[in-house]
Image (cartoon, rainbow, N blue to C red; front, side, top):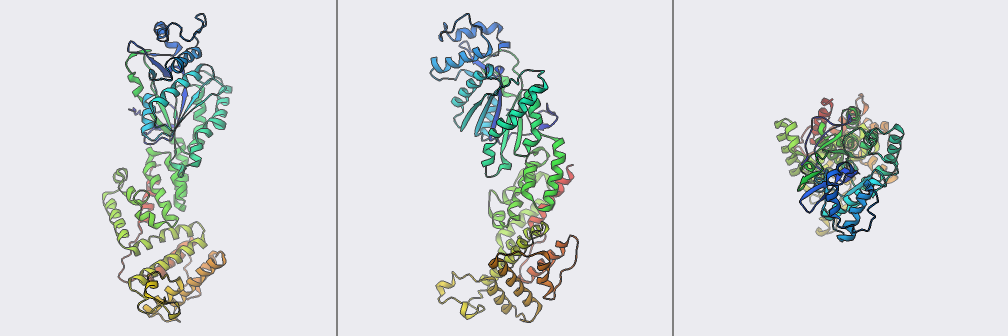
Length: 525
């Protein structure tokens, strides 16, 4: 239904696809509304198009059924009011003969894309208010799936060409203070506001609305994804049947000038592991690979938060659905696509490989300076690797858990959950570690430090994290950035806790995808 164009009407917009719409904001004027006459002709209600068809439109209303004085001038608002009252009073609320000359396809496509609310902005309270009410009646009758239709009436007229700067500023203020906050209230309450899509419909041209909207666009795009819908003007005032020009419109979104700045901010956020921020900035630029990259960043957010299981196993929100995305397959090397899909299958099959995937989030936390959270997540990963061996090799049955901690019955044994200190002690017995040796002392120090943080609710600075290794004879090599040496030592420690038969994928899937995604953002300058 939509027509793509190589260029946009505004310098801050470029073409894109219509795939999702949450709220549609439509500026209303008289030229958008037509009437399906009894002779099969659709006639515009615009006063500029009325000349020859005026008498025919008058006949549609009958012999003055509303009792309006014939001497009264048929101004735009009066004309719209007459047809609105004719629909409500004479036709009993039937708006089926109202035609959306330029917006039928827009509303239809938005409804198919999940539209939840339509906001009709009457550009002045006299002339366009009644046309907005006609459109509202038509939409409510024709698109039942729309949750809500609102009509807003501003105090200024913004639809006239060659408006002054004062009027533009007044309209811009109204957009920022009233209209857009009202349109975005659903985004504030949304679970994923970065996915929220606001579509704004307007005629092309240099008028106050267009100018004010363009000025609001940069700040607006940082709150949600913004689409601009440009319907083509109706060619004639009379068309047999439905007006075909209504099926043509152009879709644009914010473009290069904002992309240059947001791209740099997305790169900085990505490098630091702030994937949610990167996803929000990239989501507004689907034409710059932003769609596929924002979805990747959103999934890496799960991993960085320690939600490894969801990252691996969730079919919708996890990485699997993204790896099947055709856009990703077109952008990445086919060998890499196959490699990463095989690696995901391996993670699903081998719990130890899934546990090792957590090293990605440990490194991100250290990189961000969250040393306490990073250390706790490291210790949790160590505990998980030991627990997998506890279950696989049945350390409980082997008597590797000390007598006072063992369950009294076999039934309770299945529910028994040993702590990190018990697992460390059992692992050292199973691997015949010397209690005076550096490995045993290191593992014991990790368990004690982890428990102290959790039991006393304290924090651990970077230097104290280093002491965990240096006091056990395994000092951390000095590096810049300083977290790199610590992360290397943490991985060495986790490797010690792994079964010798395990095959640990390196780099992790999260690390490989993160580096690929960052490279794509950097290369698309």
